Image (cartoon, rainbow, N blue to C red; front, side, top):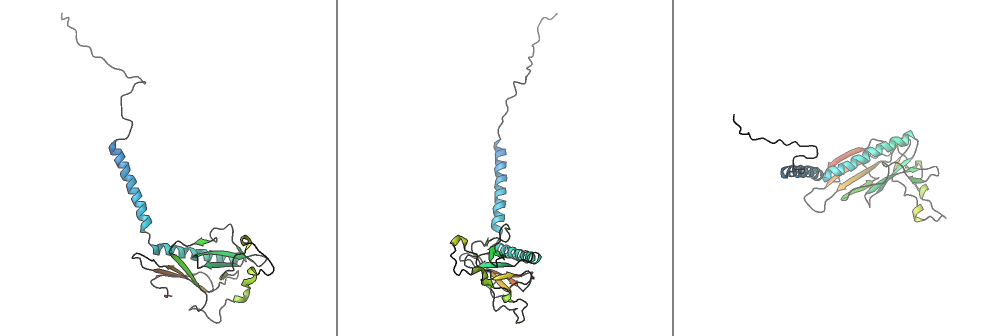
Length: 222
């Protein structure tokens, strides 16, 4: 009988308290992939942000006023309310006002669409009310339908700066659906760089919808 002993193999049993030693962090390859994806995403965002031309941005401003003006005219008709549009050419901004029961112009509150809108830097606006190419002597719009100066009469009354009423609008949106004939020129005229000037027009032809013209290479186009 062979009494030699066979070598015994020991078997380790891992309990729940002992686990194989594994790396719990990210590998260098995983980190590089994440950084690459982040770089691609950032590049995509920057590309889309800077690929929008100034002409496109100016077009968006023109389209906004076009849509809001038409909506304001519909509101004036449905609610039998006299509205107005004030253009601040010097500061390149505009806002809507309404005529209250005291026949005074007041700012529209609670409606962000009709609140003051500031055009971005490098954009300007110019309002034309006279010598319009489509004006006729037998115009349906009667500018004497009400007195615009009613809201700014301050005879014998001292009013503080914060209580000063807003200026009367240049463009009227009447409850009858009539509007003041006007032409509003939007400009982008870069001072530096290779960009070309761009112009748009919004024309009000006594009733809505407004007519949008552009982009134009010169401001004299109609």
